[in-house]
Structure formats: structure tokens, C-alpha cells
Image (cartoon, rainbow over all chains, first blue to last red; front, top):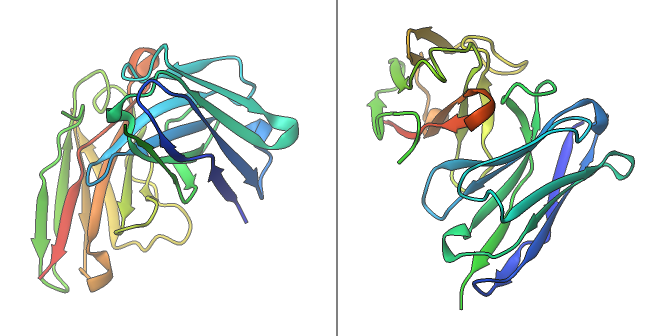
Length: 120
Length: 111
């Protein structure tokens, strides 16, 4: 069965950095686009970033553009989200989500999420 | 402020139906048939309920249905059950500039 497991969350000071990992199993990662979606405490879902199945194109929400970098290693079945210059407003549960196709913006499987807390 | 507009709450009695709207623009909901709906229970990850406006993934009951008219998509939950009490989110593909937009979520209460 499809599984997505996020890791790397934690507490970081404003201006700091963190790298989130998403390990995929149960499907062939190289055939699908992948996303990160976040949810601030008590708030709604916010799309963060997308990477095409082959890593050739990446898209970012304006709120993270220039600070977050998405990459993937299909041979390791892993997705990475490098987060720099973190702000208090980046505090959220970060979900890794599989695209239904290669770039449909339909999230058919989600991980359990990893909490990132930005606080001094 | 979310890009797609949903009512913050909706409610119905067991067995009744509830319909949730999701209003966008011609650049997202109105421009593509990539509208999806998700159900999220407290403390859990979202679950895909409807994709491409009106398609259901395997395992999702046919009590859940989707539709679209112009810039507004809708999710109808028929035969409400206690387990349907959750927050429902819509999202849409929004082109190469914005890529993905979400609604703010609608909390459904089963009375």
C-alpha cells in the first residue's frame, strides 16, 4: 500500500533552517509529481510546493518562494524540502502528498505530517 | 485569505444532505476541471473524496458527489452520518503561475 512518511520537523529559531524528508513506499516515486502542503495550528490547508516527477520543474507558493527548495531522489524514494530563513508564520504541520498523476494538483495520498515550530 | 471561498460552516441532521460551495475565478475553478475535495478529521491527514470535479476514488461512498457550474464547485454529502462530521476543503489547479489553490475549509456538523 502507498505510504508517505515525513521526518525532520522540530523547533527552530526565526531565521534558522530545517530540512524535511518524505520517504515513499508502495508506488514508483519516479512516475509521479509530489507536493508539500502545510497547515498552521487551527488553520486551513496551504499548498507550499510541487516538483514534477522527474524534478525538471518546481513550483512554489509566493509565501515561501526564495526561501524553500524542493528536491527529490527517485533512487532513494525520498522527497526533500529545504527550508531557510524561517519565520514564525512558517509554523505548521507539513504534509507530503502524492499527485494523482504527473502534475494534476490532485493529492491522492498524504503522509501523517511533521510539525515545524519556529519560535525564539 | 484563501484563494477559493468556502462557507465556514454547514450542518444537517443524520440522513439529510448538506451541500458546500467553493467559489473561485476563471483562472482556477472555472478554467479547469481539476477541482478536488478533501475530508479532514481532527488530528488526521486530509483524505481525497472527489477529484476532477465529480470522480470518486475507490472506497469513497457514493453519498459524496461533486459538481461545478462556472466558477463555483460544490460538494454534496447525502445521507449524513455522524462520521461525516469533519472539515472539508476544496482545491483547484490554478495554472502555471499559482499552480494550486485551496479553499479555507468548511466545518460540517451533524446535528
